[in-house]
Length: 125
Image (cartoon, rainbow, N blue to C red; front, side, top):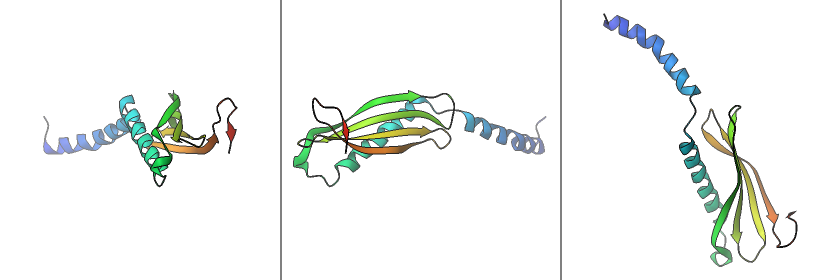
């Protein structure tokens, strides 16, 4: 029979077990991708901030070059994205991202400008 005392005892043991199980469950892929889409939109807005609108591509865009999943480790996703935004200057920004499993956050760990000249190899600026 469950009495108030037994329920408290059950909660005392069950709650930590439930919290541990919750920590080790991974997030659904849809949620991870939604968070990634938010980061990409935010990055594009930050890149365009302060740039003369007449100098922008119509429309500015980004291209996801790589999106990898890892089953183990601290980081369970990795992505490489190129951002194109200027119309008269052959330049792009390459950013690399990784998803921290425990924190549930995307982390940008690489950000470089590259020259993009048609017909030539990419040269770092």
